[in-house]
Image: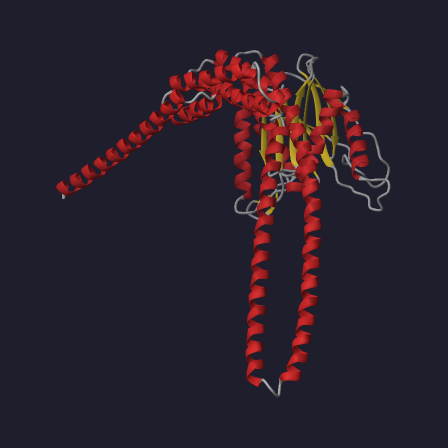
Amino acid sequence: MKKTICSILAVFILTQLNCYSQEITRTSIKIDRIKQILEKTESDTVRILQLQNWSDIIFYSNPDLHLKLQTDIVNLCEDNLLNPSSEKEKKWFEEQIWIAFDHIGSIYFYDYDEPVKALKFYLKSAEVLETLDHLNSSSITYDIIGNIYQQLGNYQKANRYFQKRIKIDQSISKKFEEKLLLDSIQLVNRNKEIAFQKETAAKEEKLKKEAERLNTILEIGIVLFLLSFVIVYVQWRKTRKQNKIIEEQHRQLDENHKEITDSISYAKNIQDAMMTSTVYLKDVLPESFIFFKPKDVVSGDYYWVYKTPYNNIYFTVADCTGHGVPGAFMSMIGTSLLNENIIEKKVNNPGEILDNMRDKIIASLNNKDSKKETRDGMDVALCKINFKKLTLQYAGANNPLVHVRNGEINHIKANYQPVALTVGEKKPFVNHDIKLEKGDMIYIFSDGYADQFGGPKGKKYMTTKFRKYLASISHHSVEEQHEMLEREFQQWKGDHDQIDDVCVMGVRV
């Protein structure tokens, strides 16, 4: 038995060694072929393409050679960019050089762990990308540069590049919305065309059947056998045609489903980019946590944080109308309006900010010529905190604030109105001033946690119970509080479906 096992193992090892040897041989042949081409060619374009092929082969196995090959590509591109023969050629060499700069930066950062050298080449890559209008690549590069500056302790430059990334992501979002609108129009037109084709086909089928009936009456006494054959033939054609129609409908449904799924995934990427990154959140509010649990792929809940040059930090949790894709689009509007009021217009009063957001949402979603009023909007808790002065300003639209000091709850109620068109009188949002002490905990949240069904009786968790639970865990570290909220939510929910998006933010003074 042992001999048999040993024999099997020996055969397996020899087989693997043989496969590995063959792979090495194939790789060597590819590299030799590339070297031969490089020796014979006089075209820099061919040289760059072959160097790139060589670099792809040894990408993981030999970072030193990878660095040399990418450097050779940079040198060839720089020589050709000195006097390009055409705009098309110039753009091609710019495309190759930014890719090479990106590869070199990656080698220094990930393989050699030399962030300063990596930063030099990532900055060059970003400079070239600005001329090429590659928004997605620029966003990724700015994010890497921001993270390197943050790793090096230069938080000012890190924040500048993070802001550049946010600006580009907003541009990407705008283009996506325009494309989505165009796709919707095209889809409506396509559906109209399909409906017209079906109607035409039905009329043609009706005329065809009428003609066949008349022919049958004329020929019934003469060609009974032929008539039977014709009936069978017509039925066969009809069945085949119906099968083709059904197959086409299935194909169109599959394509539509894929387009919708791809659009939702892309929308999630955009929403993630527009929301505050965890890196920036921890940099601005190191003693904080965010418990964010969307119901679907994209969320109607969102959070947003921004620090001004005057040590004022704004943070918010908002719950938009609906969840999924409709809520996600409303959340993008919300983050854009926060950027506009706080960063661009420098409005510093939370209540005034909510008033401005409400006016803008009403104006945007309710056209004066429309007969239907749209009441879509959001519930918001918006705070402005100054840790040096130990002050907090808060304004809320349906979303309250919980202030816990030494286990005691101070429940600050929100205005009972959303940031949207409301029934009755539109009232200004009240601004609450709160004096803080070291060790206080501030909580803002959407209604998703308290509205979750679960427990032994399948009931809602409820807001009062949620406030008491926050007070009971307030003395723990923010990391532990996040874990405890996650565990409590899962235990309460059990086998029940999640009914809404959940977002809870906690900040330690």
